[in-house]
Figure 1 (cartoon, rainbow, N blue to C red):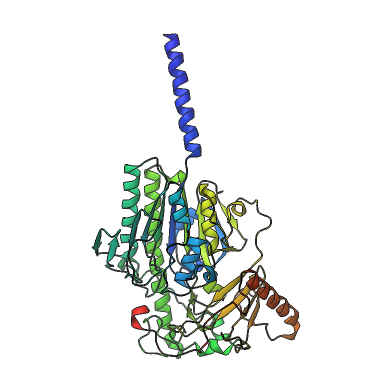
Figure 2 (tube, helix red, strand yellow):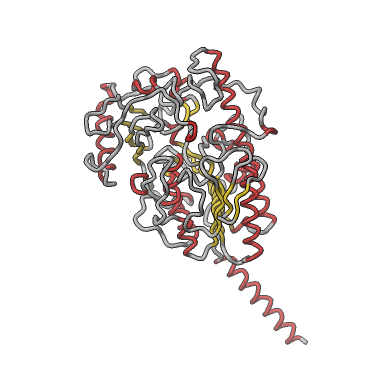
Length: 498
């Protein structure tokens, strides 16, 4: 009897040891939540005064919040392609919102798929305006054409069926995501999975669900001070004021009669911001549902969760709405990560880029790296072990004929400084005044120092640094092709692409 008990004790110890070893070496799951046009200022843990996001904040508390994350092209499709591939726009080729991500281009979900992961994409893909077909690298793909709608969007469910479930986009897409995770959990409990969830919110046109439609009615929202600090700045910024992307324009149809420069017309601006904030509250609810399921199913501790925006958004700063420019609100994005391989309760100050996500997730999952990419894994940085992190990077944006409100842009941002120039596109001298800011002492970019003789040396230094960084990426003046800047125009964009 004693021998039997001893044998059983040894057997139990072996099983526990084996299960513990397998758990320790199990590949982590990945839940990647991508929001569209989300400003960090609209998230509680990034300092929002009015928008309360307890579920997103809890992720940050249990993981890492990256305080200085930027996109390298502030436009949805180019930035999304950079997030997937680890490349700048000039390398992956998605320069506008109408170009497909090249099917043969490797990306991090595809690499995880090759490494034994089940992979899915659910939600707004937004690379290829009229194509809702499944893309390579995913076992399951649920999306729609174009921007989708906040209510009753029509979906292509993995090319198996088309349907238009009634309801609010944010919750419908969360239902699709949870259905897939549950199916994976039931059918292959030991197989790691990676799910990308692409939210529409808070992209224009902003329509909160009914329960949040009046959440901010009591909050007064003036135009920001920088909207009227345009002296010493390039003329194109003033020319943009009354256009589709200016504060006196239609404000994504929240202003019906435009242009309207009257002081009392700020109410239209306020209503637009209130609606934007309202859509963010639903995103937080979605995060709460996803986390609750992962916890109840025992998968939370072994799941890397990344919450991110694709690009920033101007809400009146410098007299502008939308994005595309290199000003701080346009390029700053929220980024939170938690899960295996990451510390908890840490805030990282280093400059992280959208294209760093691909190498970071592959690093955390122990998957082979993507060759020849331009992003860097922030795993060591997040754990406080990278003392040689980047201190400068360059920005690129090409003038769009469909949205002729922003010039060509090439710029450099260091930890403390920013320099932006506006190439004409034909090799001739720039026709717009450049911009130079000390973003450490002037974070709202109120004073353009580009023409100040006292900062001429700093301007020359940054001009040289920008030229060197562009050349190192293969963008010499001869090879850096861009459209001709045809100037700021007042006509509205085509209704189908707004």
